[in-house]
Structures are given as C-alpha cells and as structure tokens.
Length: 332
Image (cartoon, rainbow, N blue to C red; front, side, top):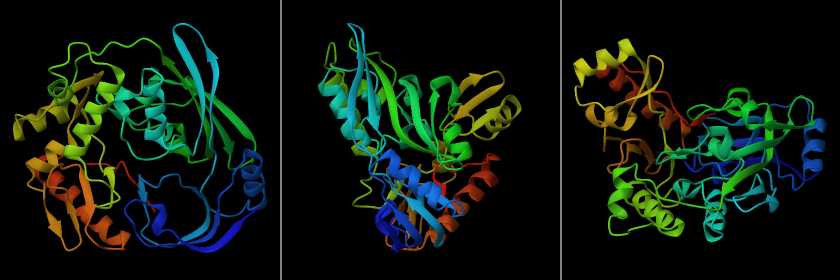
C-alpha cells in the first residue's frame, strides 16, 4: 500500500480550495482498494475522482481515496447494442468521445461534462434531456464498511434527479460502471440551443451532436482549469403544486415542468438571474456572468469563503421567491 500523509488537496478539487488530508491513497486495483479499506477501518473516508463536484472548507481528518482504476472492455455485443465495462477513473468526456467515435449512441448529450466515469452514477449526471441512468446496466463497488465487493443493478441504484444510492449513503467506492449503448442513432429535437447549432444539418450524426453540445457548453460555461468552479452549483428545485402557484404569483414567467404527481421542476439559474445575482461578485467569489448557475473562484483558497457566498445567493433567492436552493456540489 502506498499511503501518503498530510497531502495538500488543492490539486484534487476543481475549486482549488486548500485543505490537508491526514491520509491519502491511490489504489490501482480492486484488491489494493479492499486492503486499504480493511487496514484503515476506523478512519473517516472520502472518495475523490476528478474533484469536479466538491470542495473543502477545512482539513480532512481521515483517509482520502483517489482511485486509479482504468480500462474499457466490451463485455457483450449484438447488432443493436454494445455493453461496456469502464473503470471508475477513466475521464468521463474521453469515454464519451470513445463511444461517439465507435458509433455507440446514448451518451453524446453528456459530452464535455468534467469528472470521472465513477462519479457519473453518483450524481446521475444529465444534460440536454439525457441522464446517465438511462444507459447504466450495473455499478461495481467496494463496501467501505466491510471492504467486500458488491454489484448494484440499475434498479438497485435508486436513481433520481442528480441523486443516487451512492450519493445518499457515501458507503460505496465505485470501481467500474457497466453501460449498454445503442448502435443506431437518430437525433431528436429537444433543446433550443442544440437545435440552433444543428439547424443546417438534415440528419445530425453522433459526432455532429457531440460537437454541438461542446460548442454550446463552451459558450455558457467557464473552463475550471482557467476559472476554478464546480459546474452547476445548485440543483433545479422541485416544487409542490402549492409552491408552484406561489412562485407564479411572484415570477409569472418562471419556467416550470411537470415531473410527477404534484411535482414541478423550475430553473435554479432563472431564479438566481431574476433575483439579480447573475454576475454578482463579493471579493474573490462570484456568479459567472454568462451562466447564473455557476459560482466561480476568482482567487481565494478558502472554501469557507465560497460557502459563505453560496449562502448569500440562497438567502437572496429565498427572500425574493420563497424557494430553497439545494447545492448540487458536495461541501466538506
């Protein structure tokens, strides 16, 4: 086991906040991961992949696990579909690029999302009408409490909007994910931004859709390597019918989408923008001027400063519209 001590975590979170981990490990095999977990049973543990959906407000008094589990294997294939097992540490967008280049359909709308393959089921990542849960067959894990391997079928993962069993419990280290993708593809018009990019293309290919998604995302979202951020900071709120009606009286043009019995989704970005917070900046933290859902770091190394700014945004939106924003980002 290669256990390191007192490791700086700034390189391991895309907000670039400073914190020290008491223990740090980078297991390269499942067996090594199991050994590390069983050896350090009593330590608090946190799994960090690309670090694109978390930041630290203080030192971590425990064990950070940064897996190094790479590989893409075809485990089943027929005329209609292909099934792939992908190591948790593979870069997500590089994996999407691999799928598109091989004409495997299902993930193209999720292009250019930062992070690792192992993080994708945790958040049930989604974009432009697609969610990763719709392509996942199973998730292979190691149980942090027992150090034993355990496989979850799709229906056992408790997937919901930006949520899963893995996010709820934080008990499992994901080691690989099994995806089933289609070999046939037909573009379906859903989102105006993509439709505009593809307006002059009669039958867009997977590659053309991927390029359009990347172009749209680059226009709206800052590169976390140039301007530290964690992507979409808040979840889109889910409202009851009564909450929806109250919001309409305050904000008649608010976008609303039915998502189930007596449930409606609205846009967190629209609420933040309407509350006058788009482009707002306090010292070294601000809301990105091109997308209200992105909080950006202009120079602080303090996660506490980012958390304080987050609370100002939440308080302002709640005061104006009575809607509570929940962070999509993990805060430690």
